[in-house]
Amino acid sequence: MRWRETCGVVLATLLCASASTVRAQTPYGIGRPATAAEIAGWNIEIGRDGNNLPQGSGSVSHGREVFVQQCASCHGDKGEGGVGDRLVGGQGTIGTAKPVRTVGSYWPYAPTLFDYIRRAMPQNAPQSLSNEDVYAVSAYILNLNGLVRDDAVLDAKSLAAVKMPNRDKFVGDARPDVRH
Image (cartoon, rainbow, N blue to C red; front, side):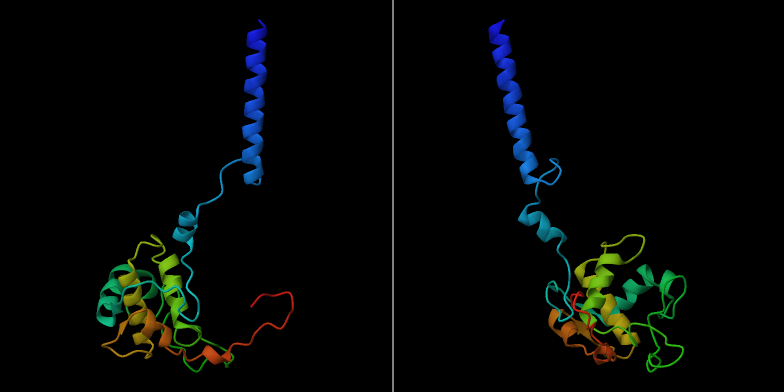
């Protein structure tokens, strides 16, 4: 009988020790810390300067094809809007009583267009487009807004070089408790 009691105490001690080790590594004692590889897989943020843009490229002509297949049903055939937001036009309206906020009139940095499309579009299948398709759709939308030529092919370097019309019209938040 003593043997069973001793084994039970040892087993209970080991279980408590392993549970407290797990608890020390995670906030609620469940799960495990993410690995560096797992974090890298989710860390797809693109900076406004183009930092972290992936390899690949896309042309305006390919972007037109992808847009027709994946985007036009919500955003209209030429980005004029529909169920989804209007993407084209509105230049010169931001300072008026009725601003038209589009990629061409309001969006301050071209690389963040890539970031948004890659993360959130198409709405029914976010993150389903290849990097090449996202570069192409970005090129097409920028072309519709007169910001890149019809024969443009965008990649990380050329997308980061696109100067958006409203880039210098944003004002920083001067509150000390707000991170910029």
